[in-house]
Length: 340
Image 1 (cartoon, rainbow, N blue to C red):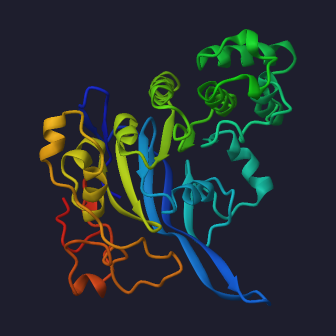
Image 2: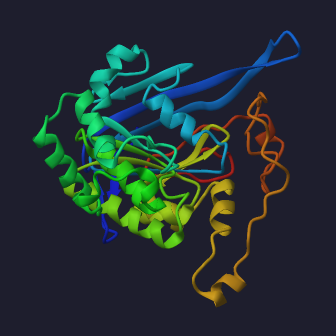
């Protein structure tokens, strides 16, 4: 992997900040599919297909792409919630992908997840205090009154009134429920938090509040995030680096500011051209990149670039040669794009 670069809130780039805490090497997650009355296996769905990246301490890595591109599947494979077909996942020098569930228990405390739906991810029969305190019970952290005080502290930390700890999830708004999910993830003092589209189910005004909360918690607690979203404007606001996924693969990855100022993969360019600009004059004058066709099925076997059927600049070489991520600071998987 190339030398790490991060961008602080003021836009200042700091190269080499932090050491790798999570490393993913050539990760693949394939699901067999069956057809017919006797359910005979006919092939595999390549949900995640050869993904590699590093996450550094104190960094936010944004993963962006269309629905169905493999973002959430990748997140669950990293946490060993679903089996990995091939590849490796390393956390603080220890390999996770081959561990049994009983062996993973020791790592669950340091690797936590915030889920997309802030209602279905909470047990409706448990009070908020019990939901946030449950991870502490599982990992034998705090007890009795000490646990209750810690739950109240976490509620205050995420912007919830601690007096509401005996209420149930249905008594809270969507934004408040997501704050409960965040407090639950922080209850065991993790080092890495995977945020799986944590604001997509919320109103826009509430999205901004939750994003700002996550950014403040990152600085205060020294967290590292993998932030998954299909909303490029949200990813731009929170991420230090961004990886763009298409059909199970990363097609472009670099610093956040560089990606948005100089997108090089045609897919990234098309995604960014669809994001509305705040200036109506600029919005009216700019040219959009419109993709043709439909997203190919992940069941297909590709001999060339998997984006070639929709790419506006693809030629015969693109349909026969499979590109890989190339470059140091700015990596692009495209035969026609210039890496750097």
